Length: 325
Image (cartoon, rainbow, N blue to C red):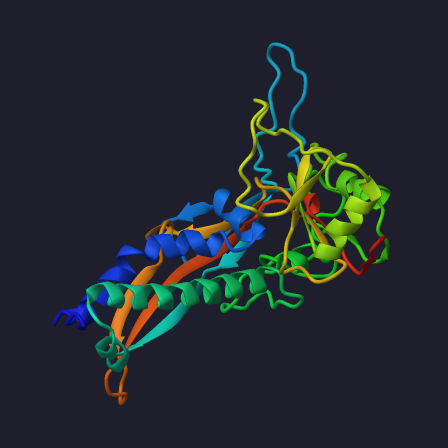
């Protein structure tokens, strides 16, 4: 005999969505290595029209040795600029029909129905975030998509309102690092890696992300390789099942959203996904009836995000690379 549904079935679904919005949030970020990496290095901001990042691009030239009675030049000499990134809303609607709720038997099945909807919402949100962050094209003033990391490494693009060729040769370089073609080699990785750090404060990439053919090519070149114990305690590191190898002790992740022939080099202290404080640990949930659709209710998971890039010259991209088999 079927178990009757509660008279508060719709409230039960809304409550389940609200209660589990934090779980959906975590699962979205665990979908790909890049999203998981950004979640672990996330910045949280409480508001503001834009997310700004102060860039120190040159010294003031006022330091000097002095003796008693000497004076300093106190004239203002600010050597700062600011990159500005817009807030972007990401959300997914979930339509729940009363007919589907009525066909279920008992509150437990209704909760299961809600969880099935959440699983689909999780995949949609992860796809939207990862696709935009690794998009091949991006308009800097867009308010409907996060900046692409591929474009941030492109040597001809404007990011955060600052042109690609700003501050060349200065202490802070906004110029991107890009290798456009060639046959994959360890030497190619080393060149790109060194260009991100030498002469620029030694700020090297902390993680590499490659398309499947790039990671497989690196394995073929490296031959037999051993797992690096990055914990330093002889234990096994938990990596959520994501496949990775190591280059100079840095994780080289297999990122499924990268196009064939592409490798990214990023620094966790310089590339940040910014979440608004309201949705820093869970998605915001809203519910409303659907106009002119009998028995339909729209539940929405959404959040507001931005981006923060502090040093473009410390990033790199290899693109259009031919794999070695």
